[in-house]
Amino acid sequence: MDASVQGGAVAAPGWIRAIKSDRGAQILSMITFFLGWQLIVPMFPTEQVPTPVDVANFMWDELRVDTLGLYNVYESFGTSLVRLGVGLAIAFAIGLVVGVAMGLSHRAEAFFHDFVIGGITIPHLIWALVVTMWLGFQFATIVIVVVLAAAPFVVSNVAEGVRDVPKDLIDMARAYHVSRSHLIRHVILPSLMPFLFAGFRYALSIGWKSLVLAEAFGSDSGAGWMLRFWYDAHRIPSLIGYAGFFVIFAVLVDQVFFKWLQNYIFRWRPPVGSRGSR
Amino acid sequence: MTLSEAATTGSQAPESPLPSKRRKEPSQWIWRLLSYLTFLLAWQVIASYFIPSHIVPDPETVVREIIEIIEAGDIWTHFGATVQRTFIAMTILFALGSVIGILMGLSRWWEAFFRDWINMLLSIPSLIFILVSALIFGLNPAGPIIAIVITVFPFVTVQVWEGVKSLPRELTDMSSAFRVDRQKSLRHVVIPALAPFFFTALTYSLAIAWKIAMLSEIFGSNKGVGFMMRVNFGQYNMEGLLAWALLFYAFVLFIDRAILLRQADRFFRWRAASFR
Image (cartoon, rainbow over all chains, first blue to last red; front, side):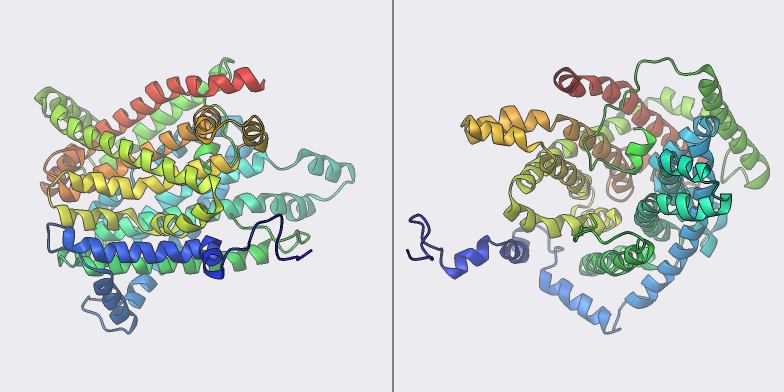
């Protein structure tokens, strides 16, 4: 029997199979969107809406360090990254202390619970406005807002992690009279790692969003401030172009930085067949 | 939302947010109350000694301002405008998000089609959507609505998508074994099984939607809570700013606790009945 004909069905031509594949879906979606965008623009009542070509031109110029803005894209993102780093370091320090306390003690949990919920739900805008009015356009302003935004997430993840350390491991360590520092370093810490990692991911994402907002209202440099700059200058292609840069930044952080961090921190785990990071 | 739910938004089937019906220890209530009191105390101290009171007014001034605002009657116009826009936006984005989420969950092709866009939308700071729509739409209420829809619908999509993917295969297998047609299967099997995910998506997306509504009103509106906050900020009236912010926050908390948590029971009831 001819192996290429199964039960009467005929294999579809190559290009139909290409479209039906996952890759095809991805490419088709990109084409549809950009084409759609380009075609819809003339239909808008206003002259304002830029075409993909306008935006691409802007982004290309920026990448070649040829900018109309006060700072180019590399300077802006660089400034923002420094502030983010400092803010996250502080948020982590606070988060670890409070989180461990909350994980170990019911009273601490009851006490801090509403602060944490409040911290998670109070709009970062309020923090940004109040701190800006208090400190002005300073480095510390942005850092404080990042800390206020990110710390609650670190706290709740750490608290959850401490509560979930497997009891049998601890009992077993006690039964074998393992020393306390050994217990912390080789049992508790590795077991906390997934939570710290998740906490770090959330903190980074939330911290970054609040940083952008804080810079838009309370600074005169940085990626968030550039958004304000383009808005004040009424340049929509630049705003959308910066959106593109933010996407590129997010992809770099996620695919490059986090993959590396994950491999480094979890290197003690036995290799399981490829598991997605999602 | 419980702490752990807020931190790890539903990649597993969410449990009912209502605690079991045991009475809370009295000592827990005391510590909670203590935390509110500490907050008020800290606020008072900071306002009196650390930060000049024209930047951070003390609690008493703000409370007085709140009472004035309520008595002046303005509050209904502005709250009304904000709530109206948020409501319209939520309807649109929930429908859009659910449809895309279900598509993505049921078909690998649609998942590959939308996935990159959803990721992109999620990684763009919401401020950009707000600024762009403010520039395009000016004071037209469509501006805030569109900004809310674009910012928030990906969250709904992701929740629903994860939900569909986590449906027990027996359900879908069973409905195809009994030859239930696609539409019926969708209506009577898939969607009810998704109820807990819809609920989580609803609470989560509503929380974000309020914030976006407020932020977009600051740039692109002439009424609403965000607009009033901008007016006060522009006049350096910090009591007014904080008063409106607190009122709004209280309102959001009220909606969340009183209405959504009460409804949580209805969404989770069928689960308890059939799975226990």
